[in-house]
Picture (tube, rainbow over the protein chains, first blue to last red):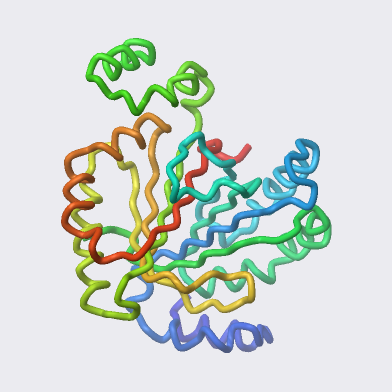
Length: 137
Length: 137
């Protein structure tokens, strides 16, 4: 779908939340970029293996959202330099084609169902969204 | 190289820093995992475009470290929910085959040269190292 008609389609679909990001969609060079969404989950019941497994189960379902290009579920690695944050329970990282696809993910029924069914498990999340070239020149 | 002989090779090469991670290398299932190293740089001169460009220049050189499987240089995206951290200047994310390859990266001459030539630019870094299956089942 051509970018302008895509925007029109999304607007017609009543996705009001996209309004704030449409200026980016108007920049054609953005299509050469990759959007990385990285979430760190902190559980209410710290170090609770059952809750951790339940969250992983939820994230596996969440990985089925069609706009996700790549997803990774991780736990803190064994590295231990001072600058390394490792107090979170689960790392969830996904790639999106662009910011619009990530916004679509936010409102995808699978994502909403994930929040409904699993958000009681976490105390907080820390999210990093970053955008940059797909390939380093 | 078979995993045991690889360990032997690394040990013989005097890479003492690897000592703490060898137990993981002994777990064969770890080879099906992907190591994600995600660094957020905070510049000394905040919002200084010249320093930011200089750091990106350094990261482009850093991306040549042979053990890096994939690298991404990003800046904070335009998303703006409460949980999103966006006060950093540059996001640097790389994939490694495993924790050993990441440790090799840490001591690679290209990495050491990067630190020598560019570390004066940043005030601090926040690092997340996470490990999980290559593919979500």
